[in-house]
Image 1 (tube, helix red, strand yellow):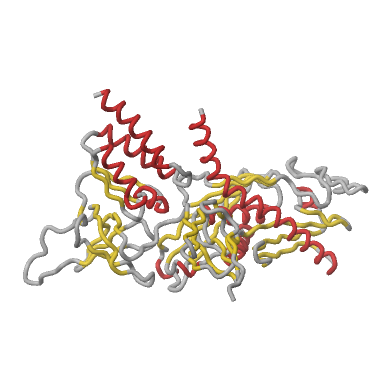
Image 2 (spheres, rainbow over the protein chains, first blue to last red):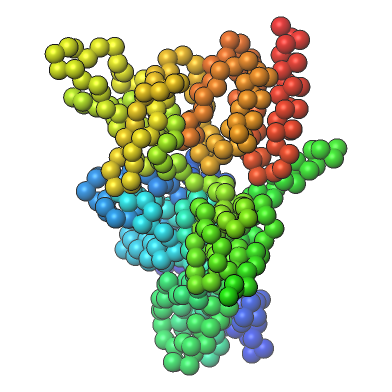
Length: 253
Length: 231
């Protein structure tokens, strides 16, 4: 057996509800979002969510090649989720695999309902989600960053898409699943939503939950999305407020 | 009965897509949409309230052609009766040639040439139709092209052209602004050109902070005296 294979921990959660990384069941990992950090993309965002480090870049609306893929009545949203070879504890073989093709699709479908694609017929909007370091919940962190990058690209949209996960460890529902809970937990559920409309745009689950637990888990994830949504809005404003502060500092000195 | 109306943000504050900026039956300008009773922002930008009209001046976004815009583009292909012009938009411009069947078409444009043109027809279904008939339109054969964000072009032009007038007066350079974010500049002195480029970059970066033209003017005057004293 390889020395790189991790051993499952003895327990994921204490009797008093303290999780393996020290969080409470309803506590999220710290999230930080930075907007507009890639000079050459039309829109970009960088997110640090727990140990996750993810870049999102948006290009477009731009001409779509090959031309036959274009839709005469709306823009085509294309999405690529990719994990860097060094983003995991054992090297990930570069290139798209079954998992990243699936995640590309679900991220695209999570973002699509938020955009006014009919404003740009015959064009494409390309979204790239690059995972630099993964620590569970990359699809929700990637969706969150991609939505901010789309706003930064000036793509007209109904609202921002926010996302979060909920998992189950034994009988306890835990918010924002961490790495160990993702590996050895009993269930995890990913949810993305348009907070402004209370619309869910992505709902996936691994493992098993009772109907009551499912209801509760969706509620927990939706509440967390609201917090993420605030962070997203703040991050977008911060890009401009930073410049305002710089100028104020210049003139006062 | 007039329903209760309310604007929820201060004029010129930064709004984010999805945010409710006002409630009530306001007239909508660009960058906003209606959702039941609420007026919501669809883009990142500055809230712009003019009487009854609400809009968001976008801070980001690529160029989308619109009839009447003057744009700067590059000829990328030539057909029997038209040129294809790349105008930094999702759609290439089409510039029709004036063909006189009995005479050879003479002295027109070549592939790779830069041209200032006006959009005379566009409906997003087909490529925009360009024209180079008119004052100031046609090939740009000297000078230099600067790239700026298309959403910042109105700031470079300024209110009723005040900003561009100031840039021209202070530097003595020839400047033409394409609505698509390409700016053509022609200066006699390359050092002044460098100062002008710096000023344009400053406008692009600080467009959302009030007092922009004063800051640009101060910067230009300072840098220009340096250049002129140095020579």
